Length: 187
Ligand code: APR
Image (cartoon, rainbow, N blue to C red; front, side, top):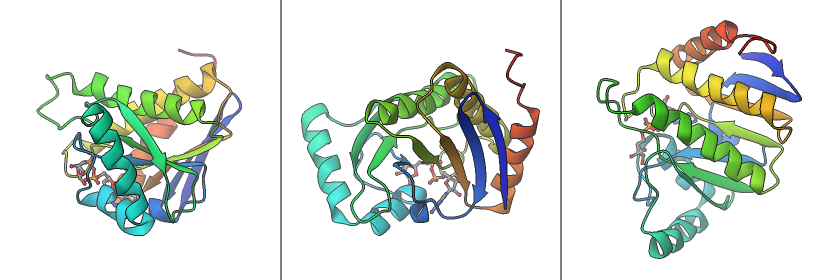
């Protein structure tokens, strides 16, 4: 299952599947501030990518003490079919009044900027915060795609920004949000 819309020079692509199988320049991980692994997509990325990714995360922790919510760090991709993994930390959903929308948008924006700074032309995201962290799927999808659209219209870095959704339910939520995005002219 796929869905696509083009903004500027960038295709926004939705797929249902396992992000660890994507062949892209950068795979984005929905990590936690400690950067030392976890469950969900984080566990899947470390499992498929092998120990090199965790070793690099440990070096980052030693250097800067982790990754604050809304920010991003970058490592190699170990055995994954990517050049880098960007590890970003989305907010834990607390009802929406604790700055969650801005923090989730920052996680996507900082991941795109960091990947672009490393020369990436293609990038794949999971549905950050929409699993263990409890962010409502439809709201998370609207924020994710809104940031991707704005980045695509403002920058020319990416040919493809992919969202790889694990379940049919998350694919459907992202597909509805993609259809609802304003076109190129409207802001
Ligand atoms: N490929 C793509 N998406 C996946 C995969 C996978 N292999 N595995 C899980 N997902 C999906 C989940 O179904 C969910 O929709 O990724 C989305 C994000 O869910 P989580 O991985 O739970 O991430 P998040 O909600 O941001 O919670 C982060 O979970 O794994 C820990 O260390 C991580 O503590 C952090 C927290």
